[in-house]
Length: 31
Length: 167
Image (cartoon, rainbow over all chains, first blue to last red):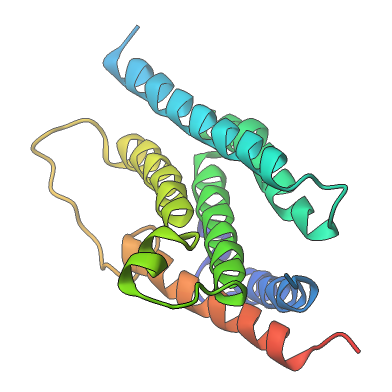
């Protein structure tokens, strides 16, 4: 995972994308 | 065949059979045609049966397999816990919480996580029985890192669920 070193640009982009995805998932899933 | 290849094949078989079991079980309990939410186990299942074992098969992609496997487990844990919270057993006793929620399913799902962990660790730390394990618990690829991600993803999911409501 050298491509995603802590606090590198790739790391931030991945985490922003992941936060957006899981935030949307929380919104979308209703039982 | 070397012991390395043999052990890896056994663990890959465990990963595929466990995932296939979960996939079929979800297909039986709630087919996709009933609710779009059921796409989550469908996609997770297909990833776990086809993509993740393939990623685990090659040294170059094993890390992606390891992370994807763990993330799929975390998504499954959160979604099933969410379901149980919505349909919380009444009266909520220790027995009913253990036996009448999705706790059992979540525990089985974590078995899949540990198979992935074993596949990853055997590849990266080797098969030397005398080798000591190094590294900080909370840093990748150790278990503390996964615990932090489980907590963080649960929080983001919860915020998405509470703050961004359907009108």
